Length: 112
Length: 110
Figure 1 (cartoon, chains in turn brown, green):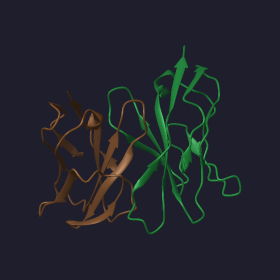
Figure 2: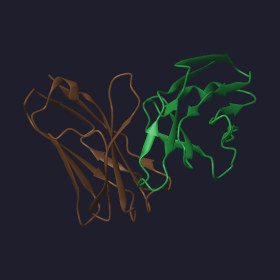
Figure 3: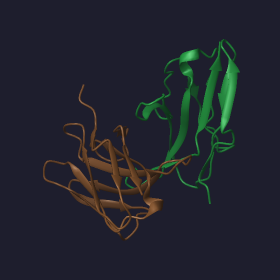
Figure 4: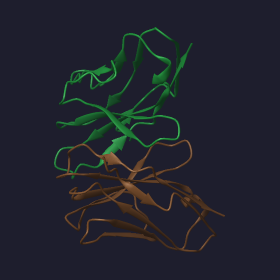
């Protein structure tokens, strides 16, 4: 069965650079969530989208933005990267919010 | 304030022993509780959700609203159960975002 796909799987950037993370939800899933997991920490909710509209916002820095496109894939754009942005970024998708979330493998971002 | 608390960072048991991974939450409404598991180098996978009242891979979890707990239990641990376990909460009418606990690493020794 198709799962949530994230690309790239690994990304190395330098401070002040920008990064774009992509998430392709399970087919027919209309809701996408982004989470950030720092080293040794639990996943923290960043932002979510339902039917291409932002549905909720968590502890997402102003330097980050995200959107969901007409094909339901989502992109997380990160600008002016800081060392503290180094983390594992998970995307999850679900059908009709509050249902089971299916997670992608994550993108590991390292900021040097 | 931490909404989901998993007091044990690491839990080590021998194969065949019972295991209980603790999870407490703070939420005044009607939460939905989940257990997610992450095996080595794999993605987070749903193990249980409280409304399903299922037993998956021998694991069960009961929501105790009086004690605000959702402990994960298995009577006989297996080596393949070694993984990172996260308890998570979803608040009602909040779009489904998950609030995770700190995670408990379960190590099952032969």
